[in-house]
Length: 224
Image (tube, rainbow, N blue to C red; front, side):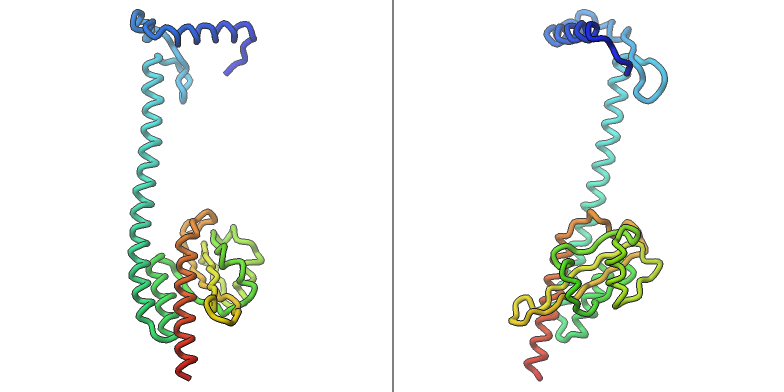
């Protein structure tokens, strides 16, 4: 939009105020609406005021439809994830030893999140920050230091395009202060895990997994 001088701006403001204060003007001069020409918002041509309004409304409707489609997509995906997590939890509760718990966790979550790899890494104090704030994002976004830390326990495959590392608060309800383990999920899909992904499900998974591991560890220690 080209700049206008202050005097013209003042005159235009007076016209705008008068039109706002005189709502019946365009009813009495309806034909004027067809005579007023405005620049098309997307093309280099003039259009009528009514056509301009239709163009704006059409654009707004397209944006609303896009947002609605996204909401339905994510809502459906979240419902599917929630149902999968319930089935996973039942499988976790039925596991009665450490090996079965680890299989239930890794194989079960690989199915729920439809990922290419899931593994529980051995406890390490360096994993502590990932208990409250899981590491999550595309491989190219994650800090090199984080990748190097994971690589001390597992081979980072080149095809893994996104990953999430969830800290497992082991021994949380016991007397011993254990170092956290990590549940690692990896996908070939770069958009599967993103930096802005909500961490609610991830923290819930960490708590449940840690509780299951603590349960079988306490049971096996008592049995011994």
